[in-house]
Length: 474
Image (cartoon, rainbow, N blue to C red):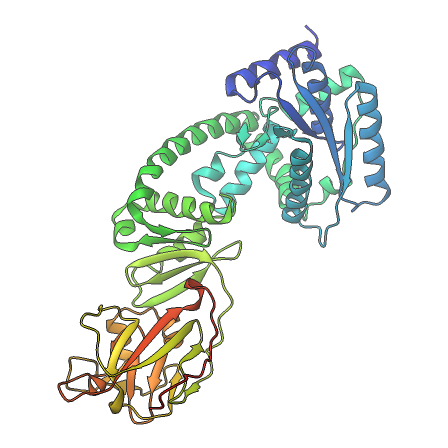
């Protein structure tokens, strides 16, 4: 049996075993011009005569190596023409030569073509040696069990059908078929971590530890992948217990429930939550996990930065994973005259209404308050908290520090500067959403009442903000 026949049989067997795709699949082949991708192109040009599939080759020109890059494109174009495979060439611009940026830009281009032509999968030429390099890279980066699982045969819209082949097998196949390929000179640059593993570390491991280390680690990767799949199935039930609230910007977790689980379960819960927000399980490493766990026992509120523009924030009994946001400016104080009916301060809109008679019933909504209009002094100011602020919370007969009050109310440290404080120059008479001051409380002698309503601007349709009241002056 020729290498061509052996290789084709091996490929078909692997596709069936891993259930990679079915008949009539439309497959986008990433072809760089190297031996791996050229072997992919060749094998799938043979496979389409035995399985009803549609294939389209895509070559991404990174434009980093001048004439070499152009020569790669020419080779791929000639091979596609010879094998009767349609080809699309895309050029991308990179601001640096980092592996991450090149990979991300490349897959952005693949996905654009995939969507534009309504294809099913992106197929790459990664093989068993790539699997070994990936596992070692992930091990050194602390990527956990997921990293040791390496490249999956199927990962979302991306297929890796050549993981059952070694690089040597693919090159021997091309030599027999007299199909040329090109070597990327940048693959020899040891400044790239993957190249250092490929050219320095792996030969040493093969010589000193195991000549078949790539085959051995490839088998281990499948075991790790199966183990992680089993854990992920359990995580789905745990997430229902630990997640309090979620949207597309953040997920709020119950810290007491999360702390109840084992460290391994915590790792996978947090990784899945971060993947939900960022859209990827990539780039969550051991140090990220430990940084988040460092928040568990801290007092009050604290946060740590994560990768991909995310942050973890502890607020009392909640752990929030969210997109990092630029700190908001603390709003400037605003003066409220007696004839003002509406004002805006920060994220709040306030409405003021003078009443001579209280409603028969009114709610205990902390954003809608009634107070004695004759116990406040005009004009008053709406401002942020200040050092040394004190007030007399409703129901109490002694002054307390505003700072202590907010801590007792479990207001997160990051939110305290944005709570509107009502100050008439003699006293703080309302801490918005928290408590009125006892000194403006309605009693049996009260004859005029001020009704103040606060609403979050983002929660309501915008209305005129600073409207002057018509009619009676107070």
